[in-house]
Length: 249
Image (cartoon, rainbow, N blue to C red):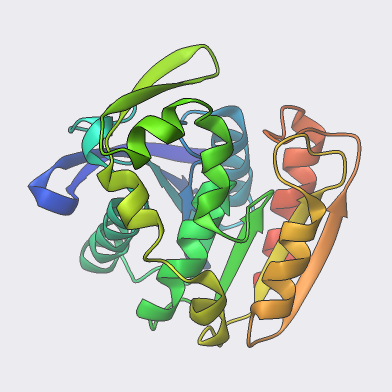
């Protein structure tokens, strides 16, 4: 069993961010943060299921909505990969102030890329977990289609993701080009557990291999079969949670 607490904290630009803290019945062995994917929310099944399962395994897990998404304040058009990193740092500061500094960062898809970029700045973090994550934030540009030309011309445009339209401003492209993941991972001295979905239609297995090659620390690569990019099946989510608990222990 686990206990779910509704929490809120201040993210970048003083925006209020909404989260859920999954707590074990007993004293937590560790604290973790789960970062959701691009345009997703804290309530996507993979985030909900893994966070709940980790809490049952003794790992308190905070999942939250990045600014402009879900129950958090802000406009999505004003966000970027850089603001996601700032919101993640704010989540870590909240845990440190209210409980204890997080020892583990977990991210699904682009959330995992953000976790990797953020980890070197958090001395209390002992390990990073990525789930079907791209090696570079530029990967999300495959969603943009014709909007990419408009953005490069300096015009605001919009993209359609999972049936919903999101406004994007040119600053998104400017920001994404500032994050050199190869250089960042060369500075990362924390172990990384990398989950790769072999039949992923969104992120290729080569991205997982690049994360492994670029990281200047111990890495473990786990290949997942029989699931999809969003880990929509419960059994795989349970397996991931169990392997995370074993890895950090």
